Length: 542
Image 1 (cartoon, helix red, strand yellow):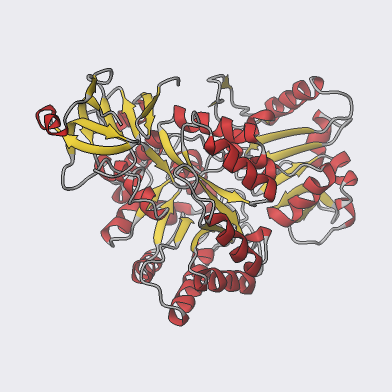
Image 2 (cartoon, rainbow, N blue to C red):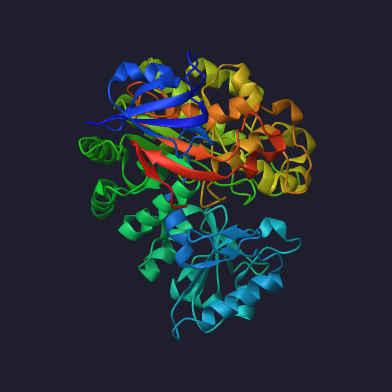
């Protein structure tokens, strides 16, 4: 096969033995050589590609916690508080008042056939003072059809009266997750997976299974490519037969621009069934499709008040959150999957959830020691310092939700966490000081997919209002870049293939218009992605 040498103004390799270069040689989709132009003659005949000669090349970004739902949600009405750009580069203004949200619902309903359910997403009640969104507020906007509003966290939904009655949830007052009004009747707010499932079952539409559609995965790949990502996760995939077939079909296409790493939803199967299913899936692994991860969902979200918090719980006195499964069932999941030699990625937003999982992993390791398990705690937004030390001792990885600082930092400071706990929100510097392998992520579609923005959040720690939350937990730009490349690859057990530009690894790259190590750190989020390269093939249509 022929050799192509790509030239750049500067190549940041993430290889500690050779941190930078000006040229990279590619053969058969892999890195053949990295260094100055002069040494490329040693390779024999090659083709020099200078289209990126004035640009900066890094390893393709690795997004270690996002969801293929990012490719599905844009089929529905966007109700988020912040402006957001869709996969086709169309800007959707934020709905920053209840009245604006209601008007957008009316406009969306007017475009649908009579009686067809209206599904919207991205709404976040924590930005609005006063009462939480309920069925009466939705009825005032649209009452002639079922209305379902998914909250930004994806852990809560609110439905109108017609949807509540259609799903018979109005008959189940008192069931955990079905929230009640002052009269003790369901108010339309449904928290966590069990309560929301009844609505999906009634509609014959489960948003979390929309990832089975090839069109969803193709749109997801487009979003990833536009953000400079070349390896991306789908960290909550039920791995249905249909979904597995779609994953194989889409990733096998030559023009699919990313490597995809789905994680099996542990709540979709019994632990024993899950082990068997995932082991069969791993036989289907290819260069662009990697099975092997298990996603456990313990608690909910802090801003949705469904995360499980240690004392003193929520700063504003709100009741503690809820578990997605009984704690003993969660402990059993850890034991079964750990014993089977599989890798766990565990959603732990609140520090009580972190504590439960640290206990469970420690117990599993005592019974079945494993030297390189790489179990990863995901989000772990208010993990405390004692828990960090336990995390290091147990050999766990962390993948922290750095975008959270910008989008919900102000809310946490005033309402959910208070002053001291908001200082340790996403304690990245502390994790690195303890030598814990650490990555950062977007949790798209919860927040927009964009590793450079995520890195900016880790470096600057600024909320949407501009307040700095926890300056002592800031990391350097170089550290943040490592966390969106090699660090994330390590948490996925793929650091031998992606995350740095070294001989033998996949030739996956991102091309930037500015040098992230030369610009002011505050400008990191404004650097433009010009192209990605997957296995040596350029994808420049962003």
